[in-house]
Image (cartoon, rainbow, N blue to C red; front, side, top):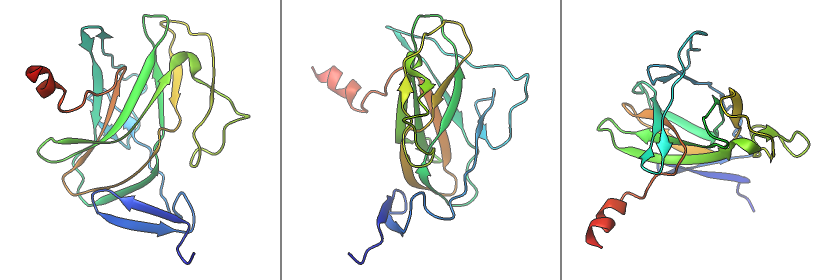
Length: 191
């Protein structure tokens, strides 16, 4: 029992980080914003910036991808990931999925974590929710109004522990469906 109570494996660095507390003391919270040119950066978007959209259905699985600039130094990201997203749809219900990826200089995308939320369960239950940094939020059922600009909160979709090395980019993918396994196409061709 001489070990510290928190032990986290850092993907990309292939090493363990030990701490007395979580989030790790000294954690710096950095907000990133979504921009109409599909960039993900610390600068706030212009108030009159256009919104983005995608189509989804039985034969179309659209998505939006937002990329940071290539990183100029090794950047270790450890802790919970939070996304506040405002959305609307044409239907009577909407499921939003968000995933965070590490993209290498050759374009290979590696998923780090993901979360999803049904729009009719978007309201925060303040009685059951705990702090943003340490616990998922609980949602109550709410009436859903199509075409309304509704706040859809991915308040917490799990922690990550990743070393983004020089030249890599952070990518946020927003969709309404999950990502198929990499070998799905290969398996389909052989059956």
